[in-house]
Length: 274
Image (tube, rainbow, N blue to C red; front, side, top):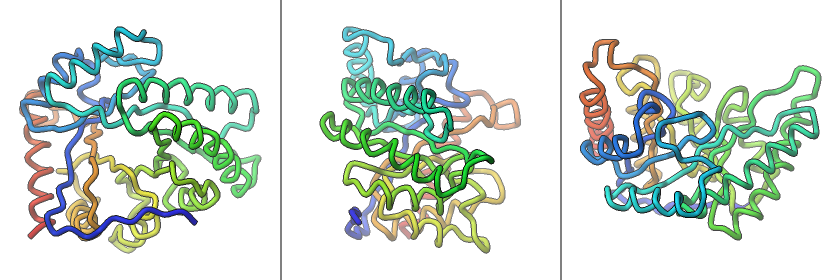
């Protein structure tokens, strides 16, 4: 089994990025990048195929791609991921093939933007198909994507999303068995076993490449433990904010909301180091 090890570093610095799915999806690319720069974000994860205001899509031409890179560089923001909606659970072979081909096109986009990964999904277990068959199908879909991405410096990363929890994603990862493959932690209730995320995190750690966070101020998810465990394991990657908690729920205007999120992230990170 191919796995990747981090060395423990007591000065581990988890980095903050924003995934555009959620409250900032309406912003233009200029306003989005300015917002992130103002609040100390280091990276951005562009969600494609969702009509977001940033305009970063597989359909943009070479000149537009170069402009996206220039815009982000001017603000000091790293394009750390392209998030697709592509999934590989479909029982229709034509639909499955289409999602694989779409992913390759989005890997081309990621390569042109200098993004080292694309996010993809499992995502469900069709009732008419045995669970093990769907897991095997998803793994087989990912293998050519791993090979394709290796030539372009882009890693397909399967998110712990939908019905594909940490156990299912581990099973996929073991079948894929490829150096150019990763998992995206999604900070969802399915991660929690007896009040802790340790078992789930330990299980997927060998393949962990990226982390999504949601409502850091909410109740019920052990973010403090997650940050501590990631720090202890030496994680130095990005952690993307992905939240739909709108400012009109008492946080204030959008600018203040993003500032608040950034401060919460740093508080959790500092506590993990203590």
